[in-house]
Length: 301
Image (tube, rainbow, N blue to C red):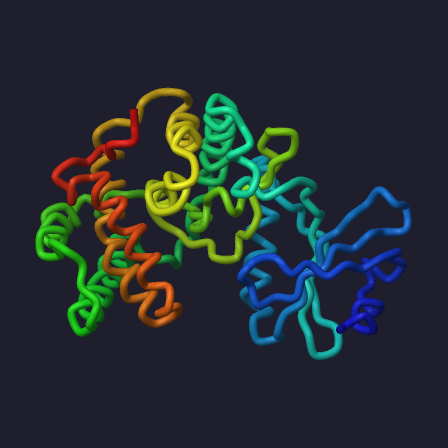
């Protein structure tokens, strides 16, 4: 373990204790750092130098999030030590919402969703840099690649032609969509809670730029399977406790439909042994939408 390297990082040179954190899918090494004062806790991530430039971008995103009062880790320092890169942020106290939420009442789950929606809205104030091409151009090209790969592969989804024609009829709706910051992995597993209250969002590493409605995909795929009250709350909280309009549901359904094919292709390539579990999730949201003959999912009441 890199204890000797850690002792060479200026910010934490006088730390009292270093505890490795094993949770999560990231290839980073993660450590909880207890500082001498006993109050201050920091999170240290160590990674290969080849991703240092990417991490610097993530660091600057965290800086920008502070400008919008987003509840997330505060960036403290970034650099290299020995043959590794490091990133230090404040440590968000609390527990993983995915592990905790089923201990809450339905009203408490809904309230947490409301808070999550408001936080997501704050993040979406950040506009894409001018060199980022339009959302439509990037998303349509990606979708075409996924369809080609899906058609060339072995795994097939029921009524796939029906889903493809739904996408083809509606893909033009992405043309006018804004190009804004996307957390791109906003779901219960990346939300921290304390005393049944929202305590912050983690894991900004897979951020992107594009249509903010694309963020809601994760509800249809993940959050809805864990807590429907939370999922409804997140949508309403985002829209300031009002109902979203038909345009929202149209785009939400479009992005879920596209996700059918990207999920099959990604799973084939990355975690083929989990294909059945992933297909269960896909079939769940296909049923929610009657294979996209309905836009608003059945669970949204």
